[in-house]
Image (cartoon, rainbow, N blue to C red; front, side, top):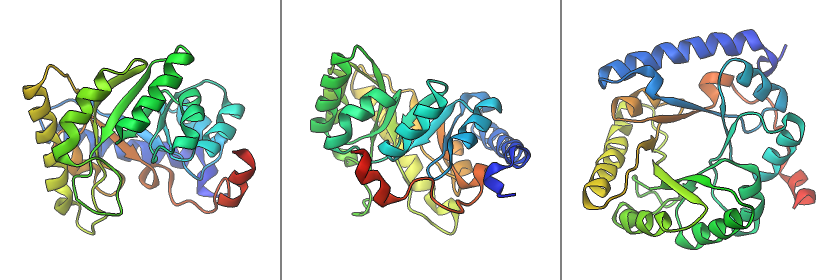
Length: 246
């Protein structure tokens, strides 16, 4: 049986994940239940999401809008859905309809368009501002220097509820080396809160390879794919198939 379809394997991995979260949370003087796990289900079918929901993992992260749409048509409105990919203008309307959270806002223009759609459909989307803490040109995100201004602007937009910041650390062989990028996001969040009246309780940082370090540095939300679900054996939806769904 493909690992992807094994509920028992997912349960076993979830138990290991929870153990690691508890240890990391203790190091930062927090409770494990203060950490939200967003399961990254890109490439896995809707039956995997159903299994996760039954295991108590309610937050589902998808970075391809068309793939999420197909899965939601099968699953329905169960779960809390996070858009974790780069927001594209031509998919903003569909994103607003499908998702409960948009974790990757890095542009006022995109945020404004998202606000218009959310307001029009009578929905309030929870959002995070993505910050490029590593300075890598291959990563999306606003700069640390521009983050405060962007947060203040987004906070004024109707239909959006700004709750915090998100970052993606470089993929490093040694997780410890990712610590400075997580520390920077936490310090940036603290600085923005000190300088403004904003309250940003969510720090979304840390993935399968570095979530323990991220939690030690203050993460309240982690995005976990491989550690929880194993390797993706084949894509749920091929890239070329998405063209017919636009």
